[in-house]
Image (cartoon, rainbow, N blue to C red):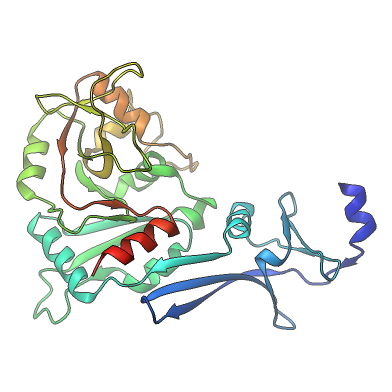
Length: 315
């Protein structure tokens, strides 16, 4: 492979390329198409990422077969280039209305939530640039319903997402003893962040309370069982008991992210990536996780295909 590259690609770019993202609104469905391309700053030349090949290494190279050129890409983490190389055009839903955001803010306020911590990675700077450090319902006469927003920029600080447990451990110094968890790519319009549920959880010995949902098509086996007493169960593989899918909505206690359940230090200074499920399973095995089955509308968006299906079915 190295010999072929040396023989064929003899024109080495004199200037490194930088990754750029261009957003184009789509009027037909109010979504946004993000075009990833590489730019040569001095000339303004733009090269679509999927026009060539990203060779990840130290340094990272971009090969353009059409013109037999090779460029350095020194300022972008290799995982980002690999991601955009596989999926250079990313469709993001932009149809969340002001009224929907107002309703969410009011629901959180009613549940006693006054501040939110958003963990960001891919394109996370767009989220912080849009919301900045607070969100208030439009036309609100005062600031009592203002939701203060703090950020944990995993992509900026560590070059990629830290997964759920690693991200929570990173954000832990900004969180209280008990806090809500919700994934940003789940559509669940009827869910209520209930203050009574949070108070009951805080008064309990539980480390986590999960909202489970009936299994979607992409997760037919489910994740966890549910006992008649309302405990989440870490069922063995051979069990025939029903399993349900974790909705990614939960009430959590900070103690879950400390020994013996988790070995990552508060603040996760090394940026260790760690999933949440192993922590939950350890706590379940000790009877410390409760759960509720939620049967309202719920969609794990997850992929552009599921987003398109959701948009087609949502007025």
